[in-house]
Image 1 (tube, rainbow, N blue to C red):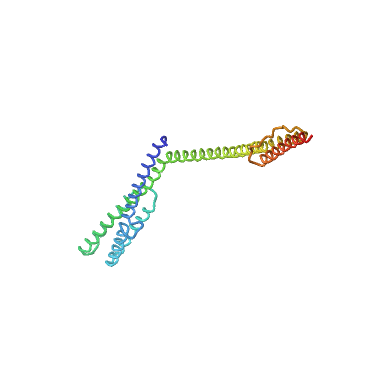
Image 2 (cartoon, rainbow, N blue to C red):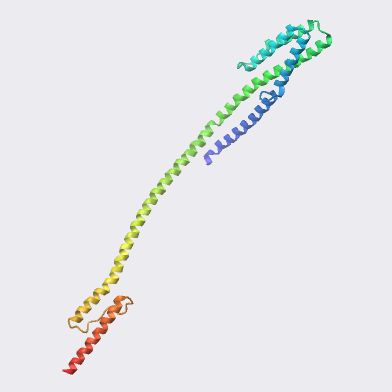
Length: 260
């Protein structure tokens, strides 16, 4: 695997970058509160409700409508896929503050509502900036995956080559095993045949020699030597019996000659 070290280092680096970006992305999502009921999104919603309720309680419907319009445009910008352009939104906040100043509300109420408007503007712009920043971070995930792509493909190709080579080695081993088993079977069969021939020769050779000796004895050649008398098997027993028979024939001839 020496040729893959650079690819493995690239994958390790890519995974580390992906992990870091993912943690940052999750942290930003939590701070933004898009997946939970906390964070800037929830605070922005609470501030919006407070402002609309405050304007309506103070009987300034035009300011409440202006606040609702700002919320609607902010949500539309959050759903948009285009680049952030909050100039018009900032102008609406500025107009809302000017309308608040020229209203007939008390100075204390104007101050409280003005502070809420500024908090709402800050949170709204922060949420918008977060949203576009997250979109950019999401695009970096694709860049990291593209960065790891060649190394991943190289390792996959190397693994596939290893599998192919292993399959070929297994096929060769199986073929060799089949030939070996076949060859060994033939060799064992030939060995048994050879051993059987030797066994037959060792059994029938002495028997044939004993048969020849018995025939010669029957023809009157009483001095015929008897083979295989030292064998411990049946042929040895037959040989010893023939040898005793030959001795008896010699004794019989001697007795006959004496009688004559």
